[in-house]
Length: 440
Figure 1 (cartoon, rainbow, N blue to C red):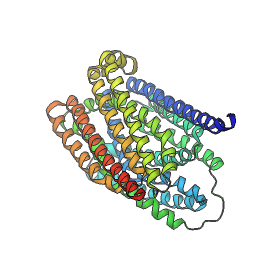
Figure 2: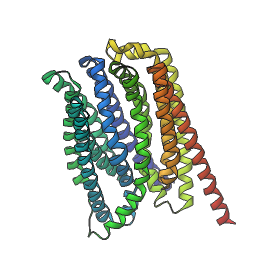
Figure 3: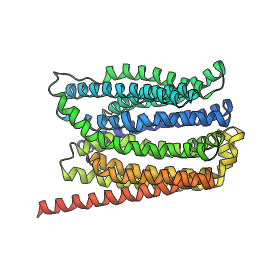
Figure 4: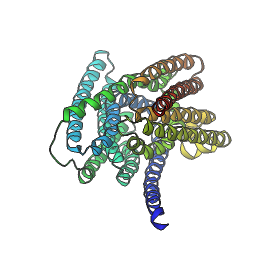
């Protein structure tokens, strides 16, 4: 009997250890973020904080359209490359793709600077340029972290997640105290912090990940990663429009000060929900990808599908619990984590948490489809719900200001979740029918 139980006990011990590292890393990141909100809202007035939030939307463009999709593709194909014993070719392909992406970001920086100068918005040139540099460095860091997570190097990933969150806000605060309380200085602190973290990440990466052997056919891996990633890049552009439109709608129809108030609300409400679900997703991504393999086996895909739905149920349950807690204690939460001048929007915190939680549940379903390499069928729901979100943001910001933006976020999240759930359910039924035909 001990011999029979030993493999299961060993697997449980290993998974428990990995889960503990993920909880440690994500918890440290959340605490760093919350501490950072408190610190920066004390040092920056709502208008300057709003400018910083608008600058971060520029960084979001790179993440959603260039390095974010590439990071997804790189992470997805680590397990197949390892199974085939061809990590050397895989890593060579990754290096080539990252260099190409870096060149694209450099062109974006030049075009953004030139466009702002021509438009006479010279005050935005510095923060936009620094934001794009920050985004490029963050994306490279995410790629290294994704490979290490796929390789189950949980401790390395957790260490850098925690360090990044704290370093970003602490260095930003230090520069604000030294050079002055402006949004550009804060963004420079973000860029400096991610530079240090990326350097450390690379050192650990070289020690842990080894692509032994000759490079056989990197072009094949490059094509596979590109085929997987380009649909994510396409709908990533629309996702970015939806994510950025809330702040720019407020900037257009209200004031930069209201953008700052909303940014604080977003970081206390939407961001923690994303992190909480991201904790589970980070734990399960390599497990999903290893179980699915190259996604050619319907039985393996069905197992991933079942696991995904269980995770979705947990995400929705967690969302309901924190929603009711925030209804009761939103004022106290704001007093603890945000400067007093931001407290006027605390009553919207429960609804922001609800919006973030429902969207995060939709993302867990998307992970199921990505594990089965069905990124192309996600294009339509991603594009249409994103455009719906943009329209809702501008319309409701015009009529109701910050409250309207929160309502728009809830409507978008529900629409996204329902469509992704319907799509995944349809694919699950298709898998079941294929298996039934085989057995008969």
